[in-house]
Image 1: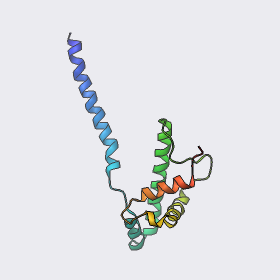
Image 2: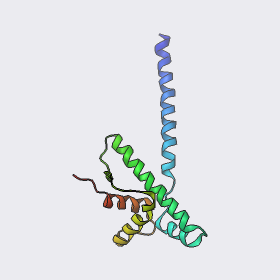
Image 3: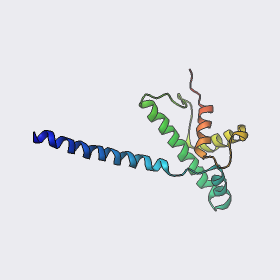
Image 4: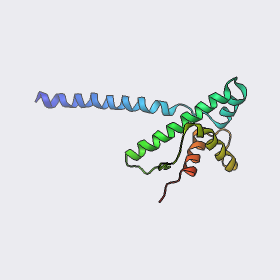
Length: 129
């Protein structure tokens, strides 16, 4: 009988641990993303702003790519499909700028950079139906 009484306590600790792990995974996602305006300000006002902005764009692109791959591994439909085509870090800025230029009316300065780069990847690396 004691075994059955102890089981709920262990399950409770397991649930608490699962919630704690989930929070640790979610907290970085809750951090505020850089906006288009903030990226432009960084480029214009910092000594190495252009380089910092480029590093940021590469990080966003790599994060989107990893999230897309993880989603596929989990059985979700991909947002974009590389399918052996070239996608290198050096391409992040041109993808971002091209998307902003093509769809200038769709974006406001306070929108996140990730939104623009995500759309750029979806438009440039479309998945075949």
